[in-house]
Amino acid sequence: MNVRRSAAALAISAALCATAVATAPAAFADDAKRPEGLYGTKDPTFDGVWRQSLALLAQDATGVKPAKSAIDWLAGQQCADGGFAAYRADTQKACDPKKGEFTDATSAAIQALASVGGRSAAVEKGIGWLKHSQNDDGGWSMNPGGTSDANSTSAAVGAFATAGIDPVEVAAAASGKTPYDALLGLQLDCSAKAGQRGAFAYTSGKGTPAANDLATVSAALATRGSGFVFDPVGKDGHKSPKPLKCEGNDGNGGADRAPEDASEAALAYLSTTMSDNGMHLKSATPGAAKAQPDFGATADAIMALAAGEHSAAAARPLQWLQGKDSGAAAWAKGDPGALAKLVLAAHAAGADPRHFGDADLVEQLNATGPAPVEQQASEKKSEKDDDGGRGSVWWIVGSCAVAGMGIGFLFSGRKRQRV
Image (cartoon, rainbow, N blue to C red; front, side, top):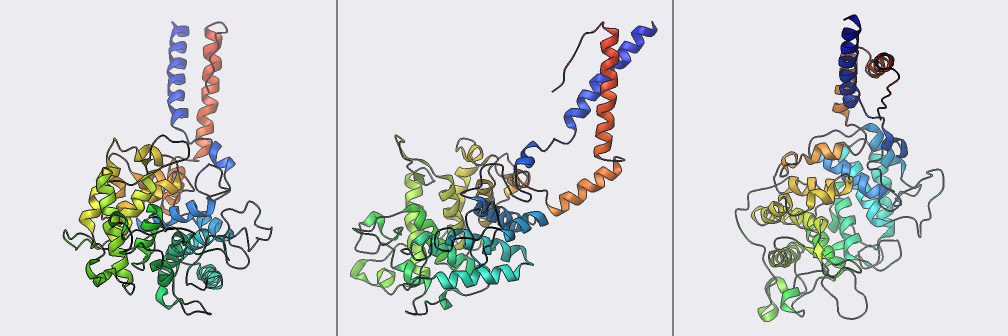
């Protein structure tokens, strides 16, 4: 009878141990591979600074205070001249100003560091780098010295706006041209085909400029003088974006149109394009049989529509993104940059990213990096309340080992292994 009771007690103890170990803190296997403070576990070579910046911006926009280590990591990526590379594995090694530093990464980092606060010196150095890298046409290229493109110029506009500098006052020293001069020069005007008017080309390359959706969503936001984060307005009613007015080449279709008119025309193009595609944008990848939904570009379009005070127009593609059949949740899973894009789109449109369909995007984003400040405080309190935190976990593991040995003895060497 005593043996039976002992066996039963040990079996119950083993069952409880299994539950306790299953619910204990993970061994942080992914964190071991990740530089301290960095979001995401995938190779950061090409997007480390970009995804980190978006993650910080998304957290800040939703009232989450990022971990100090996350902010330190991003600030520590800055090069001596103020620019940022895509990722620096060795921050003691000097950057290559001509090849290794990028306008897009620098602009995103400036927006993030300016938003979270306390890094004014880094922001100022980054702004100095952008001013020094500005082309004579008023725009920027991905790398300093290249041909201006809509995406990099738009990213720079967002950096200045977030740092509290009016982009119209950022003029090239030699020509006096502003970022808006460069951007409006890339917009397809009344001379283009009707279906492409208002769109933006990526750059002024050889041949006829072609509509580029990624360039258009970036420029539509930048010509509003906005970065990735802004306060949702939500007071526009149901007005639709205004397309270029080309009859007699007057109104907003002329060469002297204002940036706001350029943004309206771009948003009209995007709205029409998304309506034709089932309320989202598409992109074709090399080797693909057909174009696929572009979740990132669609999220950017939502932000641009919201910045233009077209919340009703932004709500429709947002509803598509939130739908179970869109594939957006699977696309963003575990990816801090993608999750941040969805968070920022929902925030801009006045929706709650914590209730994005069935998902809490903010919680998912927080889980890809170091715990936010409030979560850290909560975890420390929980450890204290649990009388030793991790130590109590190891006490449980030790008890499990004893229970396992007892069961093994009672059942004549029968072994069990727990992974």
